[in-house]
Amino acid sequence: MDTINERYSRQILFSGIGQDGQSKLAGASVLIVGMGALGTAIANHLVRAGIGHVSMVDRDYVEMSNLQRQMLYDEDDVRDHLPKAEAAKAKLSKINSTIKITSTVADVNPQNIMELLQGIDIVLDGTDNFQTRFLLNDACFKLGIPFAYGGVVGASGLTGLFIPGETACLSCLIGSGSSSGETCDTVGVISPIVDMVASMQSIETLKWLTGSHEKLNHVLMSTDVWNNRQHQISILKAKSNCPTCQLNEFPHLYKASDEATTMCGRETVQINRGVPIDLDEWSERLKPVVSELKKTPFLIRIHLFEGERMVMFPDGRVLVQGTEEISRAKSLFSRYIGN
Image (cartoon, rainbow, N blue to C red):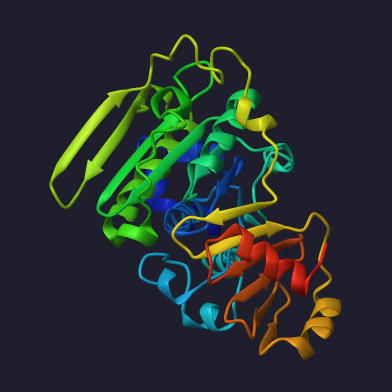
């Protein structure tokens, strides 16, 4: 038995995949947006399954509170302030060196979404906010790419595979104003529900990529594992006036990116500087005027005398931590970084 067949032998034995299905997986490309709890669990499944190209994008870095549920990270990643996408790539490359794994440290927005989706067969949602989800939904339906949505909070999860031309889209089922406002950072989350939702996203992805479309579960599935409740809603019927999947207006693709946005539940404001940041240059510039500075190949993390912290990324993003007030964050940004 050759090395490839040995690696995937148990998966090939499964009648739903077989040798033909394994070959289809090897030729597929997937994009995982958000490498937090859901994203790391999804990536673990798909890399081990032998997807030919697994691409990941995330804007954040690893923190201690992530380790309870974000399975690919460890305390060394926290100590080194590694971006999640880079830390995940390092772990996954040791799990499967026979496939292509790419990572992008960036904030997904209307300006870069189309480039990120080039050559992608299916998109999997590992994000933590509906602004990005609706953007992904619009981009996927514009390009005809399936979108595997997933969300978790507390002990509850929601998941469904939205397929352009076959099902409704996320906007049909979950209106722009329907979010409860609860996040993992405000009401918590337990790890088992993460694994369950990520597994459902991964299962539907394997069905789609191997051509087992008759096995797809065309529902939006809601699960509460603590209170033993489960509910399913069919996603086959779209709303006639949906601006995304019926009117082809794709409103979230044409929204201007906010210069400053609050990262929900994190006491963090993200500011997009709009131009790249040279980490070496800014490290030397800021070192004399801040209380503490740490530079890695991926970011600069600084502690300000005012008490807040900043994290600077090469793509021009700056996280101001310790406040949710955009005015305060912009004031600190202007004081230390300027325009």
